[in-house]
Amino acid sequence: MSADAELPFSVGERATYDVKFGIVHVGSGSMAIADVETLRGHDVWHIQFDIKGGTIFYHVNDTLESWFDVHTLFSLRFVQRLDEGGHVRNRTYEIFPDRQVFVLNHKPEEPSVPDPLDDGSFLYFVRTLPLTVGDTYTFNYYFNPKANPVTIRVLRKERIHVPAGTYDAIVVQPIIKTSGIFGEGGKAQVWFSDDSARIVLQMKSKLSFGSLDLYLKSYEAGRGAAASVPTRAAPDPSPPGAAPTPGTPPPAASDPPPPSHR
Figure 1 (cartoon, rainbow, N blue to C red):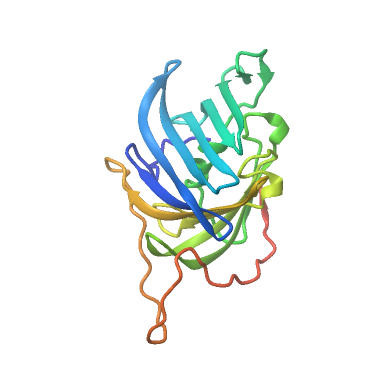
Figure 2: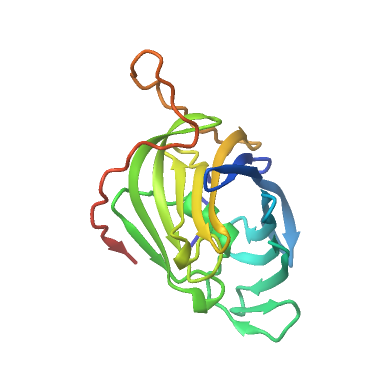
């Protein structure tokens, strides 16, 4: 796995999201590339994913941070700070690709994999894939081997309406054998812009506290030659007076059986 080719993201890229639990608007989220830093002698992307919000009965304040190599995309550090319904979990994973081990919160070393990715870096790695409808990608890249293989299914293309505008999207289902947003039980789906930018336009997942949905509200391109901006779709012909509902995609067609790529 190498990312020396031109990437669809760069430092300064920031996307913000409206967050809903089911149909109830409860907060906001963001996904950003904060900087390129140096970690254990490697130049690494530092990305951060935040979700904040809740109802009178349930609050969520989650932060995921990932540091991954700018050339290989291998993860070197992954941090989770999760506060869900008053249940707080703080986890720091130090990942060592050269020795194929990881360390959780200063505990003894555990076996890892040669090409490790975490929950955050996997999302950026997927943005570099061709994403052809009907394809299924299978990888043994998750840093904790117990969660492998990771499956990426490219389900369909469709036009969606989010607060940031109307876009043509590629719908992807990532499956990691964990309990997080992309866990097997969550049946998560991610809508990437159907262009070279591959921005996350929308995300839906079922978690322990219910359905968690994110809809793109605003987007700031990164800096430099790799800066990408998602392309808005041309207006749909529609009856007079009709208006799209933000965050509501049109009905999906049936998915063809996907081939497998290993």
